Image (cartoon, rainbow, N blue to C red; front, side, top):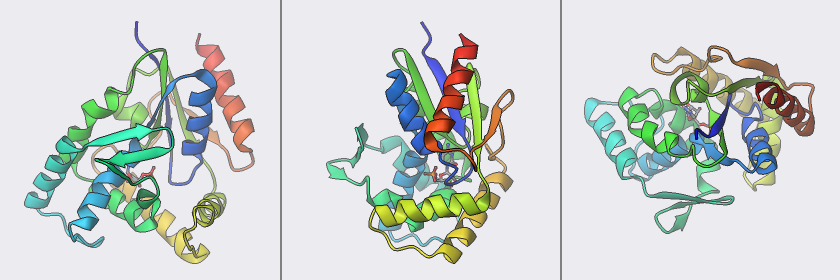
Length: 224
Ligand code: C5P
C-alpha cells in the first residue's frame, strides 16, 4: 500500500523543520529533511573551495550532479553522517544554508536528488519538509501544507536556533540573509518556492509549535 505522505513546504525558518519532526514522531512516520540534502552538497562544495558568490559553470553543474549521485549520507536520529563523519552541526551554518540556496537553482542537481527523496516514502507514512515537496517531489501527497510566518518572526526563530546551537548570530544580517534566500528560492526557474496546488497555507506567526502541529493533525484527520 502507498505510504501516507504529508508535505510541509515554506520559506526559511518558517518552523517547518520543527513541526515536521514533532508530527513524524507523533504519527510514527518517517521524516525527510530535504534541505539537509542540499546543505550536504553545499558543504561538499565549500570544502572543495567553492565560494558562496561563485557563478556556476556547466562543469560546476556536472560536479553537483556527481556529488549528489555519490552522496553517502545516513540519517540516524538527530545525527547526519556524511560517510563516517557526523555533520549534523556543520550543515546548520548560515554559510552552508546560503550556498545550498545558490546551488539549488541547478535543475540537474534537483533531478539527481529526486529518487533519493522519494525513497523516504516507506512504511505507514512520511512527513517531508522542504520547498518543493508538494509541487515536485510528492505531487500526489494526500496532505500538503505551506507553512509561512512573518519575516520578523522567522528571523527571531532562526536567531534563537543558531544561538542555541552555539553559533554566533546578528539579527540585521539574518533578516537580510533570509530575505535574499527567499527571493532566490521564489524567483528560480526550477521548482520555485510557492504553495503547491491544493496546499493549505498556514501562517504560524501567532502560533506556538504545539498549536501548529495541532492544526496539521486536524487537517490529517480530515483526509482519512
Ligand atoms: O530548509 P533549509 O534551509 O535547510 O534549505 C536550505 C536551502 O536548500 C533552501 O534555501 C533552498 O534553496 C534549498 N532547498 C530546495 N528544495 C528543498 C529544500 C531546500 O531548493 N526541497
